[in-house]
Image 1 (tube, rainbow, N blue to C red):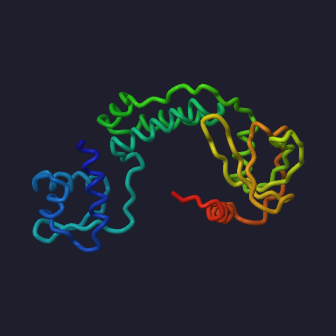
Image 2: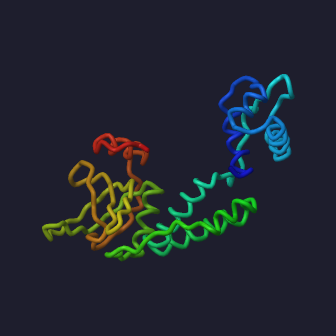
Image 3: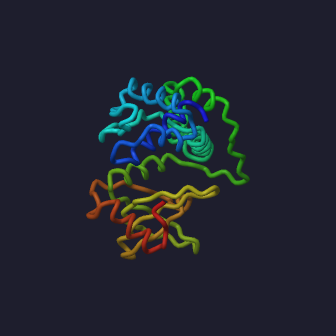
Length: 229
């Protein structure tokens, strides 16, 4: 276990206690010596963690302390790198560039030992047999979802029948070979799913839809039996 990972686990452990916990108990839980535990406590206090206590009395983390945003375990870094590489290789140019930029920003402020783990990551995304052709409309769809705005689309269904729909978009699913937009369809008065490669034309409306995105998302999950995780 790296030192950064150990400090992160110590913070999480302290957060699980409402009252001061003995140092020997915390050290035993972490599998470290009491001497190492005392050094780690001192290091966290120097970094701004509001930890109160002393040997013999126990230690407690005062409410309100926020972890530095880049305190990751090696497993978490691997997940971030793999996810970012998937986005960089499987999405439109805007999201792809954002994924690359996010990794650069993370790497710039990581502690040296974690930066090495990030730079030397060996988890890669393999090629796909049928790459998805992304269009500039994806940025418009994502913006409409964030702003909770209605969109009007000309849609060609699998029976090759074209229709014009006004929908309330709230989710965009990224599959390996296609993208699916989920929204409330005003025409059908129900939730519908639209393959983005079959959207012939799209216009973002000025009007916002009358319900909150979170509410629509929760109702859709319940209707589809989808977990929130």
